[in-house]
Image (cartoon, rainbow, N blue to C red; front, top):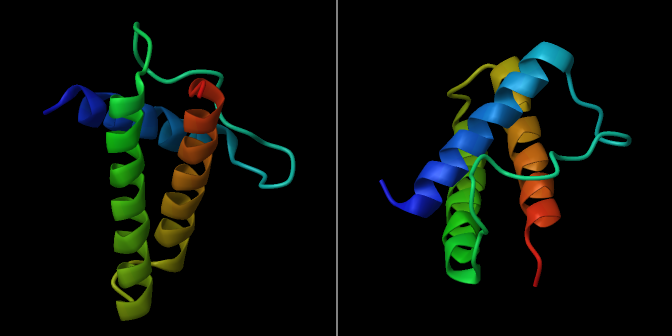
Length: 94
């Protein structure tokens, strides 16, 4: 597992647990101030994480189109990715 994959998966897990415990409101809630790591996230790492995010978005769209998952699970996965994306934007300094 690469550094980008590890940071991405750990942050995604943090977001999913937050949504399961506290819920998520699209209008008022944002993301975390930072991701789950101890060091600075460089452009190369962030670009890899963006690719992973886009891949997850495509997987959700396919699951939704084929009715593979329940609506509740799909909603949780979508909210997790929304929160993850906001967290990535909060962390990244261009």
